[in-house]
Length: 131
Image (cartoon, rainbow, N blue to C red; front, side, top):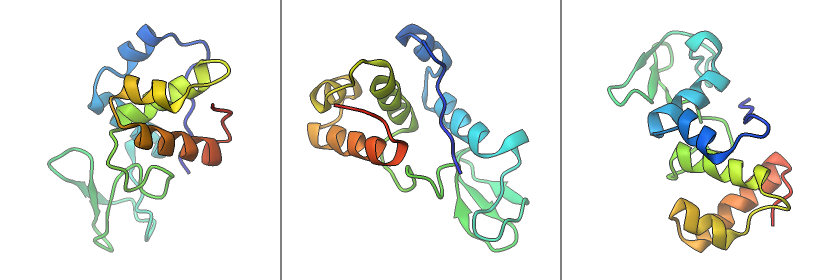
């Protein structure tokens, strides 16, 4: 299970310092899913896997399934970058009483429909109170 906890009272500058690029957000997701960087295959639970050249996907040495830190989470299969998801979570939790889909779409540079979908997922799966 992937648990996402962003620091309480983190401002936007601190967020950008912690997660300046996609690699930093991927490292965040990997560190939350796998302790001590020991990737566990979600299919067979084997802990031996090889890392693809992209530095994100892994292939299990036992069952040969391909997985990444988002496999088995609400973000599995998303085409939206991890950093954008972290930003959406940040805005949904830090702005009181929440963030609108219009504002989120402007900040994340996604369509309003995509922003609405992201908020719906966050609201239903993470029990966030968002606008």
